[in-house]
Image 1 (cartoon, rainbow, N blue to C red):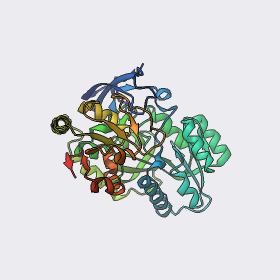
Image 2 (cartoon, protein in one colour):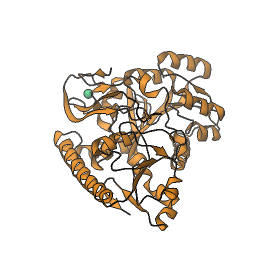
Image 3 (tube, rainbow, N blue to C red):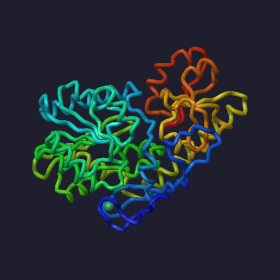
Length: 408
Ligand SMILES: [Zn+2]
């Protein structure tokens, strides 16, 4: 059973406002082996803290259920591999890191970030609770501890490896219920002049670009700058740099250090002002967001119903975690989509959570020749269309659903 929160996980204020209720949904990464399998579900409700502005899920599903056998492998995507290579070079330059410096990655997945860091000459290790992913990293010679990160693990790691110059935590700072524990553990392992950096989808981009499919159980938090500054301050730390990039449809990179150890970059103030001018801390902002999502839903359903009633075939490209919320909100059923293509071999042969569509390889684009291909991994739309030019040349049409329905 999920744990229901009645207050803010960051500042502990009991004053929260419900912003969105998606009803009850399946777990985004719970791919099924059997189409007829009965799967667990939980409520997906979103609130905002009236005190610090943090946006969070009301209900936490146990990480033991969500993460033990995690099929999402970061390194499947070439775009992602390049992103992390550049990221590694960026932090090296930014903080004048030297060969042999210790860099730690929390939630290291299959070692996508550890690999380029190690190639730059740093000592590295990862922490990854999913056994299947940790094993993949280990196979490449990337030291990975299979556990959840906590104070005890941090203390042991410091004794064995010494203090870390950089601790990273990418795309999982939103997944962890108890961020107090994480930050206190980071402080135990971090060098006094060290940097804690985490990259995450940015609430501002999620709201402005209608990325409603970012909301699913694994994402407990929808982070933005203002609540984070207050949160880290309460732990004796400063947010000293805040960058934005286009990965995952819009992410931020937040740099944090011990209080007074780093000069505060102008990017923090600029982003603060930018957030102030947006509607992300108002009920009106979420009301408009919901209204626009509903409009997009109507348009997409109308399009899919029309082409299906005309006897056409439609497939989806991409069964990422967000596909579960996408299908749930848009009522995407077997009547509308024939099959889902995904490049991850681990997902092929399984069924999508919620609507139980079969997941197949991209060879089906050419064997089955569907008339339309709805790109549900919209953040990789450019590379998918580039890799499958042949499908279009053979008369197939790509459809991009977000942030606006577009037939290419
Ligand atoms: Zn709060």
